[in-house]
Amino acid sequence: MSSAATGAPSAAPSRPAAWPRLGGAALGRGLVVAYLSIIVLLPIAALVAQSTDGGWSAFWRAISTPDAWWALRWTLIASLIVVAINVVAGTVIAWVLVRDNFPGKAALNGVIDLPFALPTIVAGITLLALYGPNSPVGIHAAFTKVAVIMALAFVTLPFVVRAVQPVLMEVDIEAEEAARSLGAGRFTTFRRIILPSLLPAIFAGSALAFARAIGEFGSLVLFAGFVPFKTEVMSGLIFAQIGTGNLTGAAAQSVILLAIALVVLLVFHRLTKWSLRHAG
Amino acid sequence: MPASGRLSRYGLRTFALGYLALLVMIPLGMIFYRAFEHGVGAAFDAVTTSDALHAFYLTIIVALIAIPLNTIFGVGCALLLVRTEFRGKALINAIIDLPFAISPVVIGLSLLLVYSETGWFGDWLNANGFQVIFALPGIVLATIFVTLPFVVREVVPVLHEIGDEQEQAARTLGANWWQTFWRITLPAIRWGVSYGVVIATARALGEFGAVAVVSGRIAGQTQTATIWISEAFSRYDFTGAYMGAVLLAVIAVSILVAMNVFKRKEA
Image (tube, rainbow over all chains, first blue to last red; front, side, top):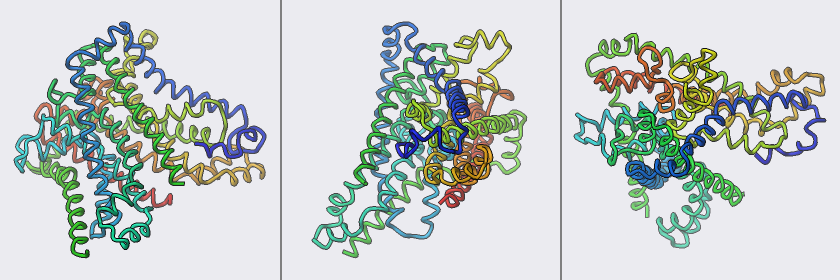
């Protein structure tokens, strides 16, 4: 956003900009703030207010019930497992898409974006079609922890791939060749030359994937279900609490989930800035 | 070296292809098989019941309201963020990204707490005869919330890139701000806007969690396409659920193709 400021700060009112002068811009700002308030800010404020409706003890009670505690732990564990899978699979896929060449590569590149475009409920049904009851390949994963991992891996597929791909394209082939000619093996070259430059991108992709995974709902409903103490993640627990009318409990659990996501995304922004500085 | 090089290359290629095939491609193929398992006629009948048709119709209506609103907001907000200076800009930026960080279920709950009968505005809405939650306005609000960032995030970098020299030139030649926007700025950002609109549309048509909370899921009334698919599955109408999924998947793939076209035009 910093480049937005180039030359503008003091000149804004006097220069002939594309935006209506002072009055118009102020009106525009007012409308933007009003829109954001109605859609986002008021609802989030209501959420935070509701979560502490019964005081801090009620807040604490809502997030420390055995099922809430279990769901929070499982949400974090499942998301970490999925991030680990994405780090390996996402990096390999990005590598293959950048360095390898085979017929149909362009189509494969398109497949990576599918999980972004596909509705989450369709993602769940898709996995159910192959790995659900009466699976044609004999794998019955539905309503197990494996199903949670598969569904989360499906919806988070693009993050690491799309973060690593552009960086891999920029990696200096000459440094690699130099390392190779100095006798470094394939793996050593990867570990010492390529991996260090990919790490910030891998972390950034992982942070986005993690933030997405901890809040995921739609792809889990039909394929993994929300069985307490078995497959239930936070979003499923919150949905169930809304159903039974325990809005304060649901709000408290939501605030925890939101706080974790915000911290992760803050780390992501720091990482992006850091890697930009180091790339420059 | 060539032998081992080829080996690791084929190894990695096999791993990547295998992962994508098992996780995405084969399962996606399976929904087509499952949908048409009992014939094209059965599949067609399953998604042309009045409830199913209403669900798809409602989804389209919601997108037709939410996406234009977010497009106008997105372009205006991007212009403000890039072309003007004001305090609190960083805050507005952060708020726009917020929907990316929030679980859809939490978005639904937040809207419920403000706009339901017992929510913050409940009394006022009741007194004036507005029903938001368990009705169309609630579904629209949820859809606007989840698709809020897309147009802004696509247009901001384009505005930075094109700079404001042409806009300034137009202004010195006597164009008013509307003419400048309509003749200079909008044509320059049109592919960025199109790209944002297309992604937002994909997200709007596919939204499930937030809508599941605020819509009440009443068949033939407040069920959107995704909710209908999930309910169809729950009452063992598998052909309907799979066929509904096929329809949404086909739309998603078309959207992907459109996105690639726009991206190429932008570049």
